[in-house]
Length: 129
Image (cartoon, rainbow, N blue to C red; front, side):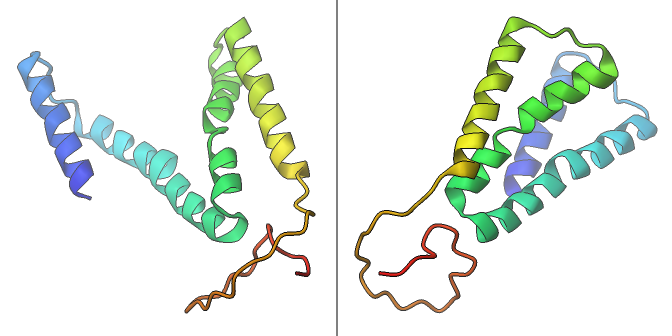
């Protein structure tokens, strides 16, 4: 929350320094609603994913958000498909596919660790030791 307050205050101060006018309340409200859904909800879903699939997979899935944004921009806002967009999309698709099809089947020992919380579902270690 502190980060948001500092960032917001800094951006408002910079806008005043560069002579920008305060936008209409409708524009401000629209920006806040967009931020709530585009950033706030995505972070909640990311935290839920961290608990469900682990940090590596959640991070990999979360990192495709710019790719989804590019698809939306191309489909709905007429953005051009460039070679950079196509290459980046291909790399993200391959990375996501590798994570989805990964198999963790080799033998390795684990030390006994007692936790106060459950480690289920733990998609990485559902095998016998």
